[in-house]
Amino acid sequence: MAELEGEQDLQKKIEETRQRFQNEFIQDSTDKYDSRDVERLQKDDALVEGYLTWRLYAVDDALKMIDESFQWRKEFGVNDLTESTIPKWMFETGAVYLHGYDKEGNKLFWFKVKLHVKDAKTIMDKKKYVAFWLERYAKKEPGMPLTVVFDMTDSGLSNIDMDFVKYVINCFKVYYPKFLSKMIIVDMPWIMNAAWKIVKSWLGPEAISKLKFASRSEVQTFIGPEYLPSHMGGTDPFKYSYPPLPDDDFQTPICDNGPIVSEDETESKEGEMEGKDSLENSFNSEVVAKPKKVNFLDDSLRSEDNDKGDASARIKGVRKPLTTFKGLLLDVSPAEELSFGSGETEKKSLIILSNVTKNQVAFKVRTTAPEKYRVKPSSSCCEPGASVDIVVSLHGGSQASPQDRFLVMAAEMDNAGSQELAQFWKEVPKTKIMEHRLRCHVLESIKPALSLLRECPIDAATNGQQELNTAQLMRVMACNSRLEQKLNTCLWVQKVLIGLVLVLMVLNLLCLYLLGTAQRPS
Image 1 (tube, rainbow, N blue to C red):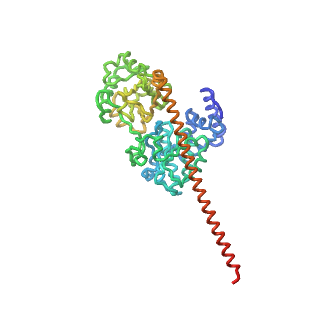
Image 2 (cartoon, helix red, strand yellow):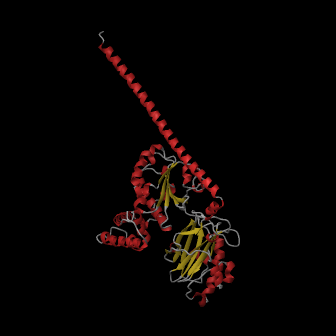
């Protein structure tokens, strides 16, 4: 295993991988791969890092993996897979889909095994169907892992297609490195134990630890009841239907001064004010003349737009993000997640949007938990070369969750100043909208635990010892239970063997009797 000492070593490995791939794999065969994949490999450090990490930074192994992955992508036409290229009946079955999150905030990729029937005529379409979902997720949430759930309720041997299962495993083992968080097999019938022993051999050492077997009750160890169906003891009311494709329910955050309103009403009201503001700015050359930093405030703060002290106070105490996602229209910081904690300074998080185009860019921010967060501003415009500070704060006593998501949407405005935002968002084609998703990271607080130990050191130590003793006792009881089961199995086998021996003895005596009778003279 190769060890990396720091960022410089990693960058050297990335450059070495790119150079060797260019020299050893591309020169002789330019038609072997899709040119879009090759171009992305040369530009996207995260893509190369993913292959290197999965192969423990061994460049030779990473190159083989890239070669196999890129050949597969061209064979399946992954870059051109769309909803219209997949047979409609496959979406309608609901056998495979993305929905919900596990307790760590990873998206759930569901496989309803009982709905799968082995059929050589449709196997290629099914494989492309899985690739469609994975590629769709990879583009929407790059670098964020998935938790695969095989729901084997009411399934049997006729539903097991080993070729298809091996393909799904290869998707995570080779084609989408670092994408697999864990693979949970729920409610597996005992008759399929032999088949899954074969599956485990396909996973390899780097993925074998990610395989989890769980009963219907044990699955709640990994997934909360809010994202589990009723037959697994969950409370999720979700029922798959098509169309449309299931997706996160992103909504406009709550208004600062009033209850939740519908999305259209919210956007209309925001659009009227911000459209007028853009119109006014377009006539004021002093306002839009290449500003270095622009902060668009909500209606309640419009009268203080020119007060820089208030603008800086708005982001005071909020930590600046350290990572950046490079988008076609906007650079988004942070790149992947917003961090929230229980401390006063941890209840706010900052999003910085930087316009990298030569035109004005409209943006809006949505969230899957609109009742928990305030977003200032949630919708506005960003001038060319300018940046916008967006403060996301927890409302009241709300607590952040790893399942919470934010969606940043952006679109280039050709006629800046002449359009109202609400009307602009209604008319802009979906193909021209840039989307970037952010998830929440919940910071662990250690201060309360430390203060508790200071106040009650003896009690804490006693409780800790009691918890330790309890944990040890539980392990011993579990071990005893397993030993008891094995002993009962051994006793049962012993009884069966004794019974067989007795039957053989009776048969032997019967044979001797028959032989003696046959030899006796009449």
